[in-house]
Image (tube, rainbow, N blue to C red; front, side, top):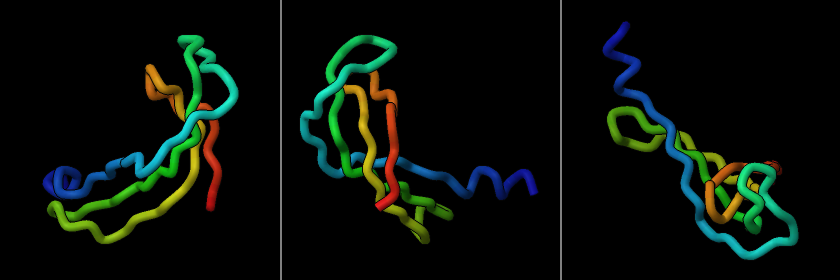
Length: 69
């Protein structure tokens, strides 16, 4: 059962982003609207992915707000 934990992982990828109005609450830098994708992989083979939108800080990468598509 312990071996199974190392075979499954999730990766969050930014597909596109553009400037948005607002600032990050952590570092006070500008925010960006991004199209995100979460990919779940088993033995490095993707078997599930989900696309969604988020407002992300341009400096620290903090996800300020997320939206379902």
